[in-house]
Image 1 (spheres, rainbow, N blue to C red):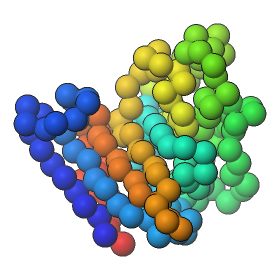
Image 2 (image 1 turned 135 degrees about the horizontal axis):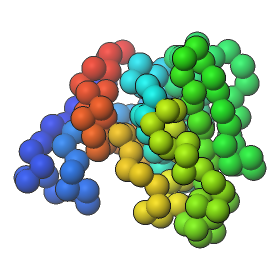
Image 3 (image 1 turned 60 degrees about the vertical axis):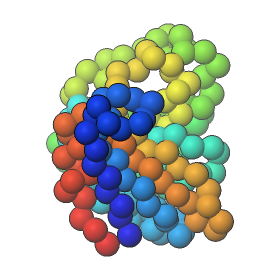
Length: 173
């Protein structure tokens, strides 16, 4: 069940004042996480940024696997923990999947030379965006995943009009 919550910016009590739309959902298993990722794939376009937060094993890469499946990708999807980035070219879309878990300081993001990937020509999904500090451009959507029993809970927040549109148009299971 999708819980869509809309609120006026001035009356919301969130840490990000620009936040206007978010939803919360319980995902009972990995398949449900992948289905949600597939639904999110409908939102991806050049320039779209999705940031994923959550502890190790919370389902971030599983969600990305669903996004890629939803885009029609049939190859192996792995966490870019060691490589830092995986590029997927699907039709006209270039999708960069980043994992900044291994960064010790935000400056490592600048030193890695990733800034150009966020210029708007590609879609970017970032695991562990907090490791890049405030050097990353803002997301369109931010998803926070947390283990909950044998499943996980997810909160997705919109930070742009593209993110808000995505949350409004997600088809419900």
